[in-house]
Length: 243
Image (cartoon, rainbow, N blue to C red; front, side):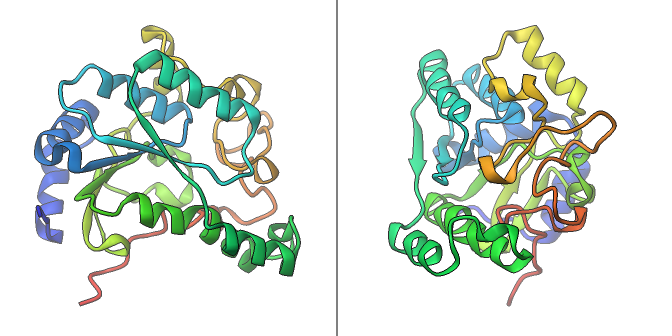
C-alpha cells in the first residue's frame, strides 16, 4: 500500500501547487482504482467527473446518501450515470443508528445544538464515509479554499489520519466559484439545478438554504451556526499522526 508522510506531502504540494489537472493525473497514476472519489453531486464534483471521464484510468466513485437530500440531487445522480456511463456506488447510513437517534432526539434535532448537529452528521455522513473508504489508498474531493474559513489553509495533498493515514487529494483547491461555473459552461457539464436556484453549496435539505446577495458561498449551510463550525466531519481539520 502506497503511503506518504508529512514531509513527502509538503513536497507534493510544492511540486504541483494548484495545478488541478496535474494533481489529478498524479493521483490517478499513483493509485489507479485504489483512489476513491467522494462525489457529493455538487458543482465541483461535476467538474472532477468531467475531467476523470477524459482519462484512461478511473477511480472508484461513490456517493453518500444521507436520506435527507433534495429531489434535484437524486435527479443529478441519474444524469451523471447516464451522461458518463460510469458506476457510482451509493452508501447509506446505518438504519439502526438513524432510528435510535431520531427516536431519542427527534427528526430535526440538529437545529437545537452544535453537538446534536454533529451527531447527526456523524451517523449520516462520517460513518458511511469510513465504509466507503475501506480498501482505498487515497481519496479525491472537490474542496476549494474559497468555500469558507475551515478550508483556507488546506493543501492539494493531505495525510488523512482519520482514515488510517491515506492520502487526501483536493485538485480544485485553487479554483474560484466563477472559474468552476465557467468550466461547467464551456464543457457543457451536467450539474445540479439547485446551483441555479441560489445554492452554491449543497447538503441535506433541512440544513441548506439559498444564499443571499453578498453572503459567503457557504452561508446557506448550517446558517444558524458560526462559520468556523461549518463542517460535517467529512472534512474536519486533519489531526497529526496519532502515533
